[in-house]
Image 1: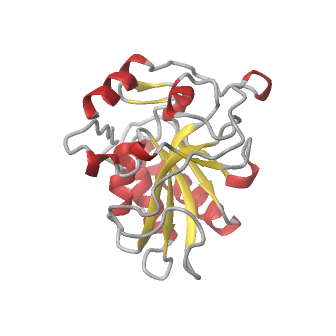
Image 2: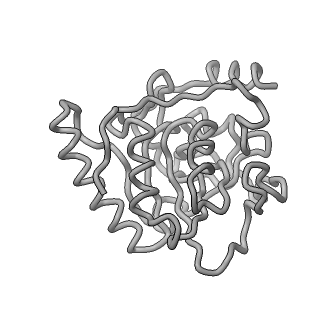
Image 3: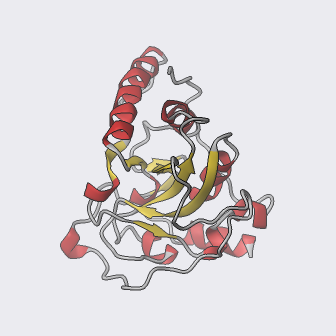
Length: 225
């Protein structure tokens, strides 16, 4: 199935440069997309409830297949899930999201223990493992569904993301890169305010499809903490 999904990704690629407005977005559906009970990389559930003392954050850094793999490997990450965030359409499908008509970006839900993985370290990994200056794209992946985004679940996370983003901008400037285009916001306040789980075949995709599509366009600039 890996080759087929790669073909779908290429054939449905869109080049929208602005997030669609609510009135023009696809209607979606009321029922969430079902996922497997367990993340096969971490061995933990992908849906709540999550352990007490853990936090969740949603990160968009281009193709969620490769992004999820980077994030589940970090010490202190309890579970991850691929999905869609920052858009209007309730419970969109992959094919719908790829049209640019839902407003979502491909994203990864990360549940982590802040005592083991401080949010600043998690965000530094986020910034370093994609190029957050590319706008509505990552490399050859073009469209609003590939935009860089941090959707925090607490004001403290959002403050940390903006603070690190400002510090990272100085490093990017020194290296000759353009302005940061990452979208920052509280998850519950951005458009529909929801993270929607992607279809189960997207979850831990690169474990299920070794050698599958894995786009990481990196600036090569380290993020100060």
